[in-house]
Image (cartoon, rainbow, N blue to C red; front, side):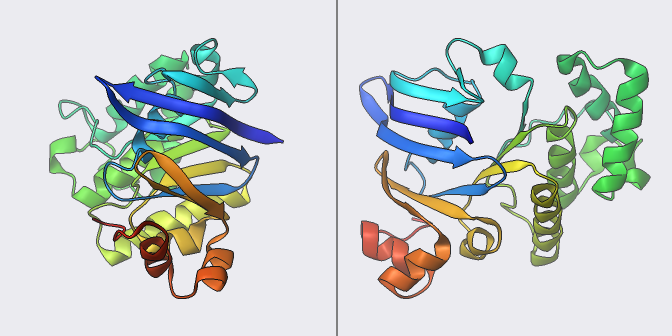
Length: 243
């Protein structure tokens, strides 16, 4: 079953076409990745998918529901880990999760249990009553992951989940995402890290200039085009991935 289906999806900003008629499907239980340089359109696709912005034309369906017609029902079943730090600096680690749980109408007693379990899951239980201002970058990324899991999402959307992390912290996040996938959570991520895509993704879509250049498994792309994923991207687009 397809968790996500996009057909002819476009998004325009003041005359600029950020996404130019893309088609793709995401299967239940897979990890699907978007690769592309800054400005390729991948984050815009993600924002349409989690109902943050509406498409200019075309169709995007999540769990069989149109993003323009059933945004509340879709949001209730997805989790989003944004690239930017959107944690509340005036609250503690624990309070950030409790407040976020209110968006899903989770009662305080239940949300307290969920928050404690999630902090243990991401190894932040000892930081529960620490101010966000006193967390390292890696700890903040871990808390953003925990926050995205508050509503036990069927689809977890991750926009550059390990940007700015040191190699050890990146490995920790990868382990958590692999664990979530093994438990049946569908993952959708954007990344600039080729090792991340190779390790986590069942399939990847390479984007450039608002269009999808190709969709395939990382292994098949490397077999067909030769070289690693960075070299494959350069061959297909003429651009370096991080450019």
